[in-house]
Amino acid sequence: MKFHMASEEDIKNGRTTDIYFVRTKEILERNKIEKKVYAEFTVANPPYDWVVFAGLDEVIELLKGKNVNLYALPEGTIFPRRDENGIPIPVMAIEGDYKEFAIYETPMLGFICQASGIATKAARIKQAAGNYAVLSFGVRRMHPSIAPLIDRASYIGGCDGVSSIIGAEHIGKKPSGTMPHALILTLGEEEAWKKFDEFVEEGVPRIALIDTFGDEKFESIKAAQILKDLAAVRLDTPSSRRGNFEDIIREVRWELDIRGYKNVGIFVSGGLDEDSVRRLREAGATGFGVGTSLSNAKTIDYAMDIVEIEGRPMAKKGKFSGAKKVYRCKSCGKFFVSYKDMDTCPVCGEELESMLKPYLINGEPVGEYPSVDEIRNYVLWQLKEFYREE
Image (cartoon, rainbow, N blue to C red; front, side, top):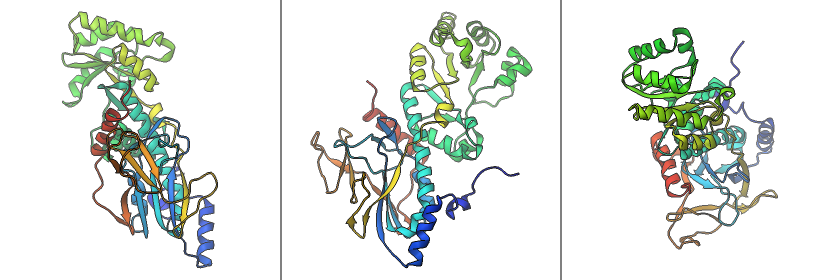
């Protein structure tokens, strides 16, 4: 018996691709056909009004050393459903002999489809949470082999921390979390709070889980009285017992406040998404642990299409032929896709920025890749600058 997972070598050797790409490559090789093509990655109908582009770093790793040129939006770029003229926005483009990258279409799409989906969901949830912390608890809902992918995409999308050890190590962070119900059940509520406070290292916020047995209000008060450095209480109340969860949070907040515990936050988890996070924040929650809606986020259904062959515009029906340029206005944030150069924004008249940057030239990396913190800050800046909630 083995774990059901592909290795890095399997991916790099093209063993995770769809078989018809292998057959296509073999036909071209046996007939000694060389065709320089330009292929673009677009999404026609994403599930949201805007998408966070993610997963580029793995595409670069896959294509390094291949005789191709790779252009892309910077990872973390937020782009709208379509440009101002209704044209799908190319997020990535490859140029070279088709045989060089034919067998990699499947894994390249897999890299960016799933990472973009998770990062987009994380950005939407972080936007809903405002200035309050969001932790990614999603790894338990997916195959453990992709825990680093889930946590990285969640973090660059805006989450403030991630729960898995390997996911946190992957992004150079410490894992974040509170305490499980298992600790409460094995030690009892008060003893579990005390032992956690006694044995867990300094710097880890003291967040007491208070919903295992009793009423959330009374257990919150008790935890605040017992733990002098209590940072927050955590409510993970099962849906069958929640009733009006917002009112429970309001009640807990009220009771803590009138007893002088205004500094104790309310951390909530269990079945959260951007809509429930927004409602619970407005009710008084000050932190959120989000799991399934992150790791099970809708993938962004990108497709790769050849749009030029030997410099001539050529695409299948339903696609826009020709190698395109992508611009974003530096002032209003509008996107424009064009076959020709553009300088100024047709909407506001300000300067445009060319968004498709070179990342590989003849298989060699161009420049230094940004850190996860730089990518995350870029996402948060765009949310504030161009996608602020009304």
